[in-house]
Image 1 (spheres, rainbow, N blue to C red):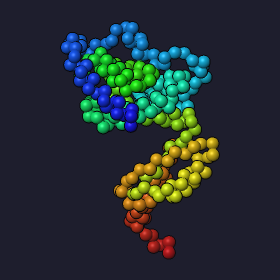
Image 2 (cartoon, one colour; image 1 turned 45 degrees about the vertical axis):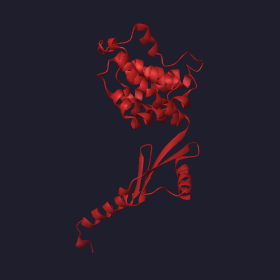
Image 3 (cartoon, rainbow, N blue to C red; image 1 turned 90 degrees about the horizontal axis):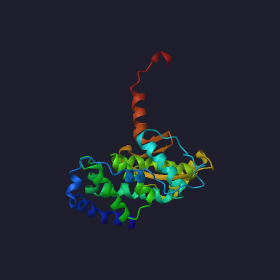
Image 4 (tube, helix red, strand yellow; image 1 turned 30 degrees about the vertical axis):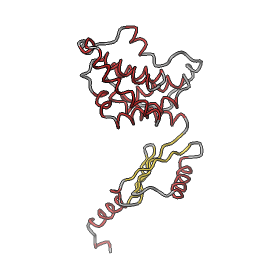
Length: 245
């Protein structure tokens, strides 16, 4: 909450930057000077002895997967995985709850150098790590900050795999009582194996009418009343072959 508060309190800087220097707005989609660009592309703040041994625990693809993998390597080498993940989570939460900032990260009509300057000041004020700030600045420079929600999700997938955690999403009509959640978690732990740690995320969806849907990895176990009713309906609609009786 404190981090989110600092982020929100920094947004007046955004309007200040956009209004303070009219010359910036006349540059069009200008690119920062060469020294600035070189600095922004270095997510990590220095080399580490871990550089040769760090590996990405999952193979992710697409724009968000590639960016998340690069950030994971930089954060891992700097021993800042948890901090960077927390910063990305707070950034996504704030973008969802703050329309001004959400619009800013999606609006490519704002000159690139103005966007980069705003991002650097906002996240410095919020106390973000240098790795996260540099990463966000490079994505801003190239107009990719609008993908931050997908990047953050991919990054979280990588950190969970790194820690041996498996995220299980359980969808029900109402929240499971604590005892039922515990029993379900123990059952899932037996299925997944003791070498992994199960992290249960509950979702509420009244449209399933009852029962539950369990998702993890590429597996989906649909035990909802909605699906059972559809299966029964299909069964009842099938023609009956009386010759078999």
